Length: 156
Image (cartoon, rainbow, N blue to C red):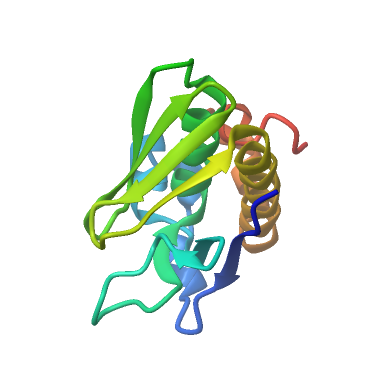
């Protein structure tokens, strides 16, 4: 079993006023620019969100956009398929499925790991729940957004 740390922390300089009114913003804007948090993805000691000289481990990413994109990619890939998860300030995570395993690579650093799909899927589901809970804690009105059920189907 792989050791996976997939977590988010509120950014220390987070400005809640910047996300005021997000419940009426287009879904794409929310996925790419709102509710930015510090995210870490470490698998077996490899920092997959690191960008040498810029981010050593955690990097700022929009909570709903990253979490939902990662979960969708990991859960929907069939055997022999691959997909990408966009990192908003540059780069992508490439994910390829081979049976019960996923190969995960970063475009920003020479980092590539192989992990059981079930392990990463569990971590991605947990991150999605945390991201949804975080967004509601900052902006309860987000539960009224037309895309809320797409991002957070398990969160009322």
